Length: 462
Image 1 (tube, rainbow, N blue to C red):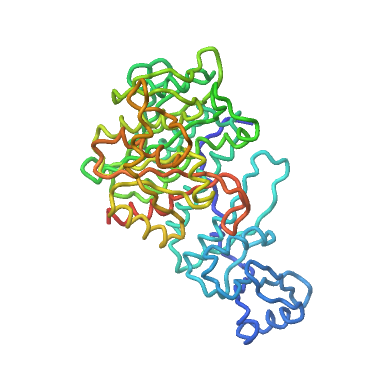
Image 2: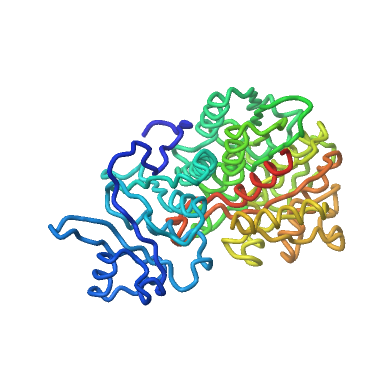
């Protein structure tokens, strides 16, 4: 299998024109009142079709050929805004168009696109899929760029570490930068020792050198947007090794990096008027004779000393150096994303990522963008009362507070220590994974919060 490279995925839309098969998206009321195509209605009644949410009924022609399809929206279509994602996985191969649907064109097309995703890179047989004629009143360009960003994040996370180690993640990063003519720089190996000591410390035990990757795009003088993503390509837990069951999904521990790359793609593709900077620390938290140890104390880029009380709390260490570095340019908005704590999953589950910020206006705007895009988020507090928990006995702060309570909050408070100059900052503790199939996702690696963030950033610079 060749190393992962950045490649724009083709979208599941038919742009060639020509004859396409009709899809009638209907509710039970359409069946009951007979307000759909007579041939489709007659077939639906003969088949006992109830238009339940996500259900598909193929319609034959009089000659017995495939003539179209009925797709059920259920009694409350707004309950599942991206229900057309199920349609993308259920349709047989062919070219289709939506004949009728009580949904907005953008929501219909975006749902179909999100649900069409397949990660079949390692499959011997590829399953053919149907394509959809994108509705004329949909914003085709914006839908396609959002899908490209989401698919990039999903692809990066789903790729196993043997093909997505630090070298391959750098190759994908370079490919993304080249595609949008962005500037890129990479500092790796022992060159990190003095300026990014925590990144070097965490990654030095791996056969693949640790590195700090940076992308710059846009125009000076525009709003300075900085994205920071955790890039732990695999996390054994280090010397505080994880049990096997906890290690199974650790290929996704670079989900923060994958998501900021997907978000950066959307921003650059839309040519937003921003001064964009992306900073990603990349490591593999491995075990070797030179692995960092519990009880070690290291000085960070910012000068704060950190006591290592658990080598499995490595993500906040590499983010600390990256945030301190990114913060030095005083960005207008700095966002960091990381698959950071199990505590966030216990609190909110896998589908609802929390974010932390002291900026009330930003928090309000992010929640509004979340609702507007149906990209769920929830604000958790940077509660100052827990500051005492990150104090260390022999250093300035600890990377793993004792007791295990409020773990998502104490992790956010740890990161906050490394942000001093950014005008506004928010930390996202994402899961980066969908444990089960949903209408807009087949399960597996997932983009979280980036559609909401893209919407917020786009609106803020208009």
